[in-house]
Image 1: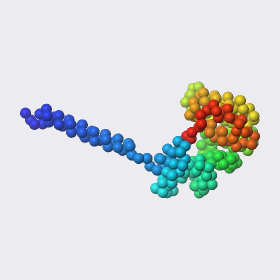
Image 2 (image 1 turned 60 degrees about the horizontal axis):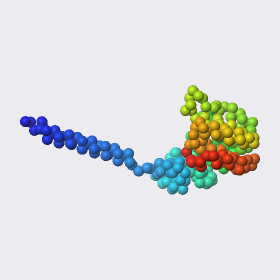
Image 3 (image 1 turned 30 degrees about the vertical axis):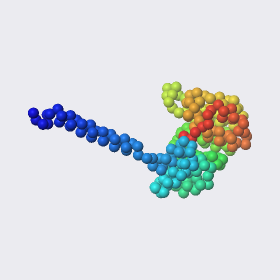
Image 4 (image 1 turned 90 degrees about the horizontal axis):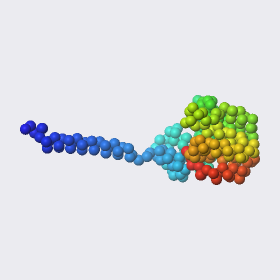
Length: 245
């Protein structure tokens, strides 16, 4: 009998093939389990609300890859969450260039909105909207800025561009429409109507999406001289504490 045809030889050959496959699979699994980069660690901590840990990681990412635009934008967003608005602006403003990234303008708009500089935020949201026409989330933020400066006429004009849920495409995210309605209702003293609009969004989109929108909504109205935090306490109590997306 040819040695190659011997059952033991065939068995050993199969064994070597299986061993080789096992080594390849182990290598692939090992590559899948590579440790996160400092940027990825910072992003993970930022999204989970661990901002101090995110700050430490983003500093490492910045040293590893100086001048990287996504790193700088994430750093500014982390500083914004930590309340270091001056530090965030110091990062973002040098990145503003003609025909530059809308993400820089968006991050700066979000920072200024948190800082209660509604006019400044509106300026940068306007730039972003020109680059992303009809973006519902940017439109919603512009509505917040107009409410912040008591310009309800323009707030309602922007709100008229938002559309409710389309039954033919139920997976579209139109939560911005319901929060725009709630914001205008809240600004005009119709607290119950505002809560009803938010409840509608919660029913359609669930808690996770609602919390993402509710965080900014509450920050805007908690800062309003016309609306005290107690006015929106029922809404706060009816939804678990929001986490940053």
